[in-house]
Length: 138
Image 1 (cartoon, rainbow, N blue to C red):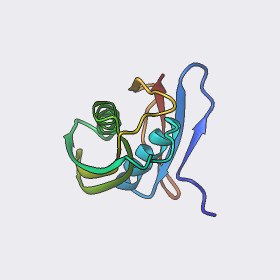
Image 2: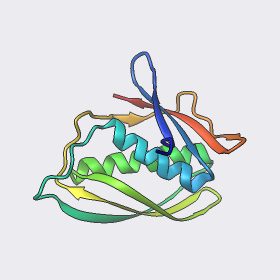
Image 3: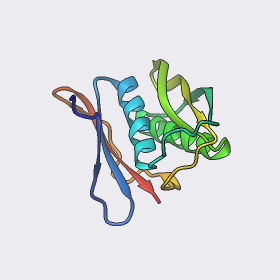
Image 4: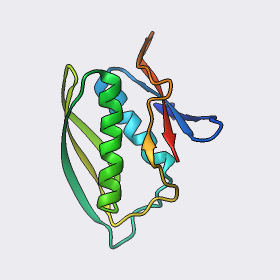
């Protein structure tokens, strides 16, 4: 079984996630998968309807774009009582992103995340791509 592209790491008060990706689009998709994994959604109920949403964002730097991306996903999940589980990064040019996200509604998380933080956030190159650690306020 392949290793997950994200792993929950110990944090004193909040939740934290170490995420890896071959490039920025995969890092962003894996960060989204990891965040929804931390929220512990149950399997979709039989009455849950599939849904898809388009997202377009622009920021000053990749770290701000990552926080904005995850924050937008949290907002949409809360607004639509939805669980998103598939993230297609359609275009990523500089610090602009265009994506389609897929999921089901209604779905409620087992654990809430209030916000994505900038605490020690840095996207770093590694021998196998990119890595970052994201801290979430719960």
